[in-house]
Length: 113
Length: 117
Image (cartoon, rainbow over all chains, first blue to last red):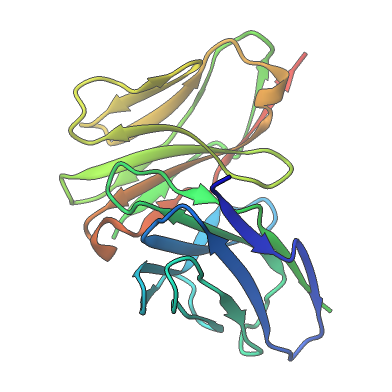
C-alpha cells in the first residue's frame, strides 16, 4: 500500500543530544514537509522540500536540519540547539500542485528528558 | 504573508445536528487553495475537503461542505448530521503562490469539536 511512514512512533532522548526522525513515502510525491505540533496547538512548518537536493526553511527552522537526497526520504534532525524539542512531529508529502492535498504520516512523539 | 485564522478553540454540537467551524484567511495571491483536515485523538491527519479560489461552486464531500465566501475571505466547514466519531480537532489550511511556489502550506490553530450524545 502507498503511504508515508515515520519512525519511531515514540522517541526519548537526553537533553543535548541530536536525534534524527525518519520519514519515507512511496507515493512518488515531489514535495515533502515537516511540521511540529505542541499540545492543543496547530501545525507549524519546520522545513519543506519541493524536489530532491532542495529544501526551504519554514516558520520555525531554528535548531532543526533536513536533507533530501532521495525522492522517497526526508529525514529531520533535531539538534541540541533547539531550545524546547519535546513535541509531536508530523511528516507530509503531496503532489505539490495547488489543488493537491497533503498526505501525512502517523507522527513521532519526541520527549527530551 | 499568508495567514489562517480559526477563532473557535472549542465547539460542542449535539449528535445529528449540523455544525459550522469558522476559518478566515489572508492572501494577496488571486490563486490559492483551501483545505480542511481532521485530527482524531490518535494524531493522524485526515484530509476532508478542498476549495480552489477559482472554483465557482462550494465544495462538498459527503457530510462535509465548505461555505466559501471569497469577498469576506472565509472558508467555513459545515458538518451535517454530526456523529460521535466526528469528535476531533479540525484544521483549516491554505496554499498559495506568495511563498514557496505553491508548495508552502500554512495551518490554522484548529478547533476542537466535541459531539454530545
